Image 1 (cartoon, rainbow, N blue to C red):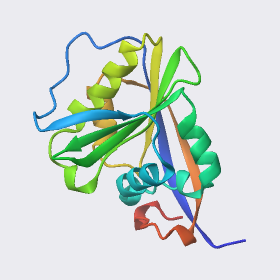
Image 2 (image 1 turned 135 degrees about the vertical axis):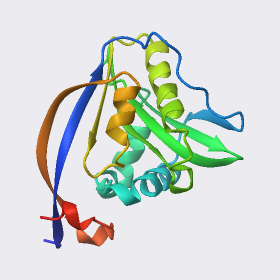
Image 3 (image 1 turned 120 degrees about the vertical axis):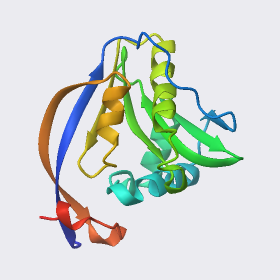
Image 4 (image 1 turned 45 degrees about the vertical axis):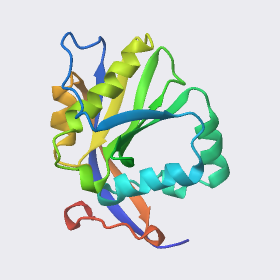
Length: 185
């Protein structure tokens, strides 16, 4: 058994049951969101690992390539990348395998885009995409390992809190993640 670091987080589960009545803020004109039709494992890992490096995103890092490739090939799972100036600035992953609900499995900005003021506009693109598909509801969760503005941004976008749960994760040390001291048990 390889060594792990025990991490304590509070996970907040959120839901949205109807499309927001007002439009969200627009993305800057030099940004666009592109859906990857058949994302490679390498491209997905680049997005996931880069966005999640500071927030203890570890589960997909431990997923074997074959399993991740099958997930990415599932037509009910879609990956949408935010581009600025031709390079990735963020991504979101939608999972509609539990239709008519769609889960926002992952959402985030690459480090160079954090603090740029585009988070809410980018989040609203994911929300608008879900309602454009005719879903009945949208779910997402965040935790105390995520960026401190994650939960307030989800609430501003129209989500409401369903419940909060305390979890303890055993994060493999071999992943080399930076784990904030406040989260260590």
